[in-house]
Amino acid sequence: MRKTVLILIFGLLTNISVSQEIQYEYVYKKEKTKQKSATGIKWNYVDSDSLVLYENGTFHRTKFYHNHEIIYSELKGNWKIENDTLILYIKLEKESKSDKNWTEINSTITYRIKKRKIKPINAFEFYAIRNLKRVKK
Image 1 (cartoon, rainbow, N blue to C red):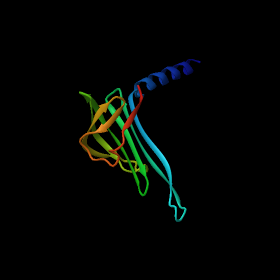
Image 2 (cartoon, one colour):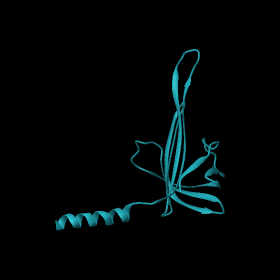
Image 3 (tube, rainbow, N blue to C red):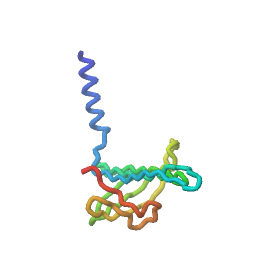
Image 4 (cartoon, rainbow, N blue to C red):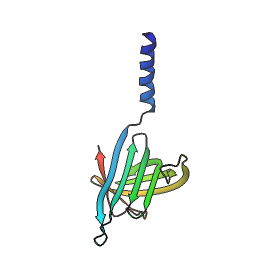
């Protein structure tokens, strides 16, 4: 009984110290099925993007685009908000879901915060025409 109580207490303390609290979460997702009328060939069009900002000042972003080609990337780093501008300081990048190693990069992307949406300011991104919408808090 004593070991069980100690394991529960240790588990709770570990969970509290390791877990990260989400401050904001932004998401964009679009799915469609397209068809060529002459051949009748159908394919799926998927476009998704998620950005999670943690209370400890770090972020995690996953981008996935699939139409004629597959584009996937994950980004990690730090963030801050100044004058309705979200600044992402990118430190790590992964360009494939199967990659086990992260590539170290040093880049910055800024976004204009408008109500519950963010739009890129200084970067050309293939998804720049869409808005990430806040879903958490």
